[in-house]
Image (tube, rainbow, N blue to C red; front, side, top):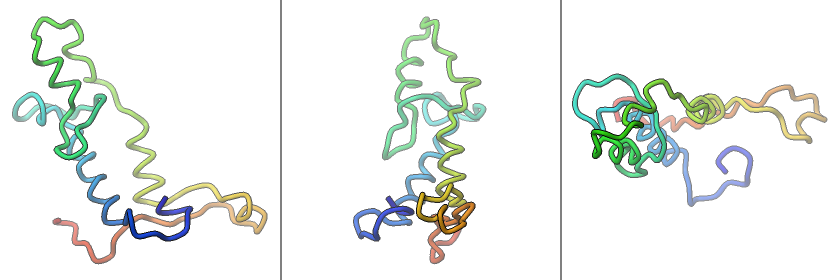
Length: 117
């Protein structure tokens, strides 16, 4: 939407960065299971608060055999968002390819945003 379609005002680069920050912060078990746990990726990340809905459900039942699932799970969608979104690296469209373009680089970075935000 932000890289390959006509410019619009409904979703901005800032929106992408805000959502990416929630997504990145959610990559720990701490949001659902207490302080200081290791990194963690699961399914069903809460869109506003950044905790793993499925993880919380599993931890509610201590005897669930799937309680520890996700300890070694890393979904490629995170890499896709970093490579194609933040870094902006993608293959060319058919038209660009015909013009000799080998790779497109259009990062989704808001230059007015400070890294501490």
